[in-house]
Image (cartoon, rainbow, N blue to C red; front, side):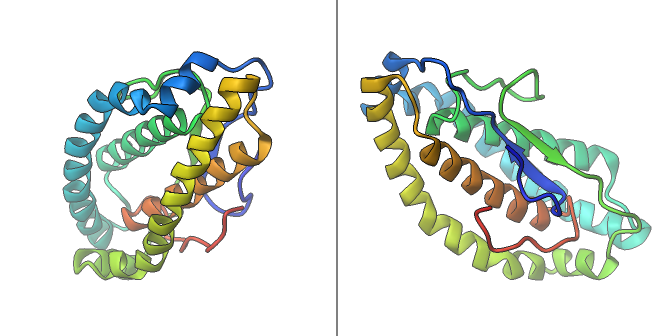
Length: 202
């Protein structure tokens, strides 16, 4: 299943047609899955704060050299892929518990094409003065409101898997497309790409 072919950031999660773990789905119904994710949540919260600081430093790198420093880009990718795995497991896109930190073999993946060089120095300057984040606020407002729907749909999915052993394709695609939109919006704000994200779940 492919995301938008014209956008440089996308998330992939193949449909699992085999019998899903009913006990894992039942644990989601009573919020045990959230408890199991606490180590990830704590580490991602700390890592995320560091990434926001590094992204701001990265804007200066782009402003002066036309390219994001390699180390900062790699750390941003680690964060994006890590949080994508966590959300995918919590929402039931996969039954495989997310790996920590640097991506290992995992069914849910994030693809990011390198930004063409030189990157936009104007966008970098907007990032330095936080205007880039403000420009992305419409995306994050919609995504925040949609997150309640994602939680509800994921919870319904737990019941369906618990009783049938299968996750409906519609739920799988809704969660996956939400993750694609979030990855595009976040990736743009931290300078992984200069292409403004589209307002779409496709």
